[in-house]
Image (cartoon, rainbow, N blue to C red):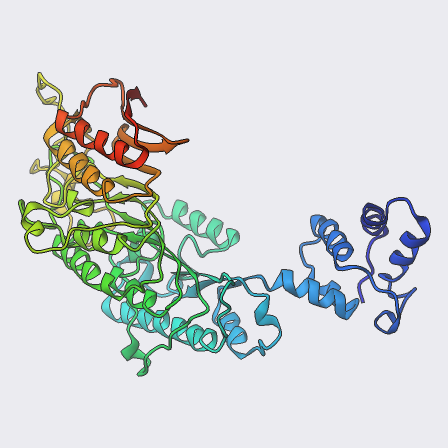
Length: 525
């Protein structure tokens, strides 16, 4: 049975009892098993506040509090409330233990579960680490992904939902051989092998660059039950992690009827297969209909990487002049929200307000509870247009620059499955588009203002576009009954000046929200 170190006990006890030595010594004795072996049967026990103080001091030097639960039943309850409050499940063994454990008493302590699904190992395979994943490997990982989530949901579905209780779940996946999943020792050993065999044929994390994990209930042959206890969900399936198919995330989200907060980190770049990107975006847009109407907070990082060489046009996911399905669906869904945020997204102006074409067929949107919007988007439109142009006068291209289309280019000798293959638009870093295209930005700000007019509680709308080292921002905010709007750009505060129509509409927003005028500023970043 562990014995508390006296320096912790004396300090904690005297905080609680002041300088009364009699009470202090009695409290210390009752936490020392040798002095008080029958503590649970005695009339004296420590107040929970004092026990918590003692544990706080212990935890500074000893993170493993579980062993102190044997001191008494009172200590056991307090320690378990701490140790079980946040659980990490990162191996099949831990998942099985979680599913088999009797949770009758302890489940009231659990407030957060981090599920890190362990996929197949591959580094010791003959050639698996020297190529992209094949179809068989993808399907096996999909099965692991689905069955792991299904088994956890079977367990959590049995837990009763408490009306006021918050319960967070995070989901991601990795192989023990992914860089993120390796131990420091394994990582050093791998780096050593790569250095010794230079040039190395180890794909490292590029091995799963073209794989998307799918959640498919048909794999287990039975539908996952609803899990009403979960109120917050975070799914991490974007850059530097195993990608998760966006629509599959929606199927997972649909299992939580009491979900309040949703955070998604997903991938929107498929430079090796633009058609796959289109399908993923459209399927994701359709699947948003599955999200529960209980959600009030949404954060979506839908990561797209614009071409490094701005001579290339960005990939298009819609036809020019047509509405973007994902932007429209997010607008429709956002009307139930209080807060919405996002980053690295490619979204059209219809994310704020219906296009003229849509206005004839739709009921106009209204956001009765909406207070905050924080949105970072890429400098491209869904139809594949840059939102920035080159400054005039245009300078001629440097004839000595490396040309990736040159017949002698190394890339032309590569198959697109080669480890060193890079998409043509990323082979040269040419960032020269620094001038905001006023027509496009004004269209976005008009659409955003129309939406703001239908957000009676709006306090913040922050819109940011990042273009290489250059940024452009808009921030509308209400503080103490006063509304202000600030447009900020890189080196020149007036690189973008909103049209009169945009200014007038935002003044209407301020008047409707505060009854006063709109303060307008132009600033440097």
